[in-house]
Length: 421
Image 1 (cartoon, rainbow, N blue to C red):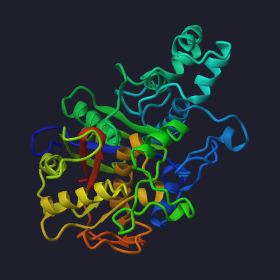
Image 2 (cartoon, rainbow, N blue to C red):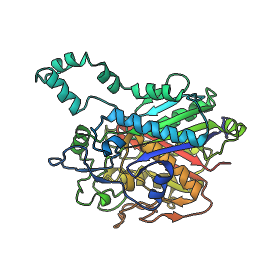
Image 3 (spheres, rainbow, N blue to C red):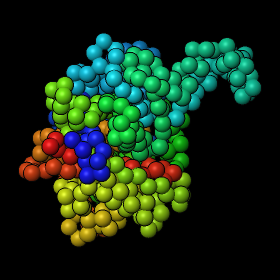
Image 4 (cartoon, rainbow, N blue to C red):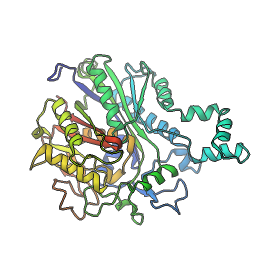
């Protein structure tokens, strides 16, 4: 039960997913296969003066019932907990709040949001200066703990009884994939027989939307939200910001087999490559993207021709889709495998994207169905790829999927997921 490098094979025994489409793995997967969009007009805060007024939002039950809108770290923790609970239930591991391994949490950087800043200013008698707000905040232990980076991981670790110190990390849009890579490597090094890998993001709040708009990264196709996200399509003009979470329960294949667990797939390869060209743009030669893809395939002990499908990073920005095409052609040559983007339906879930897309990649192998890229109405002649357009594609014999995650700051992580042996 070793791989080609003599390392323990790493099995997936549990999956949990939350996206704007649904709370739960099977409901999400059914919607993705059907080509359903989860994008809608933002209702969480006023958007009248914003350039972009749409997103993929996840409402908590109390918000849906008319309650107060929660802050991003609270939303991240709630979605993360739901995803982990679903994954643990499927894996039948970690009962009673005692999970036999570490927790790797991929999450966004967090900071005080506008409601908290306004509240601090009011408490400082209307003085909105940084010094005055800081003095008031010094007495708000609850606020400090909520927005303390890593606090989410600490609370989740206590809740699920994971071992050791939880690791909270952020590598921009590659964060969820980085969390999976860290969990895989911990098992491969023999540090643990099991681990929970988690990616979660709940950043649809005014300041984040404005910041991405100022980068000209977001689409402004507000009139028809469900048709706004158009990865690889000729008229694409930016990504749709979104939220969600996904958790994977990972174990050494030997550990999973000994306890009689159902193996959902194998995390067979992880590849990363940094790019210091620009804080938001990839190097025009695509070297880091290409190397990350090749590293993942090499790490799995495979050849490019063994990959039967690619779950794209596929954000729908003109630059990103062009660079992913360049990387695909460099790695796979003139006959690249089929590719599609889940972001056409759920938007870009940022820190959660790599984990959610890895989870969908495992379900792709399970059901032998390639999810579609919806809104693919006018193919871009410069995108010379086999994009699965609009309708899911049934396949057979699919055993290996490459999942791409390319983030701001040159953070590139690719994963190869494979069928159970």
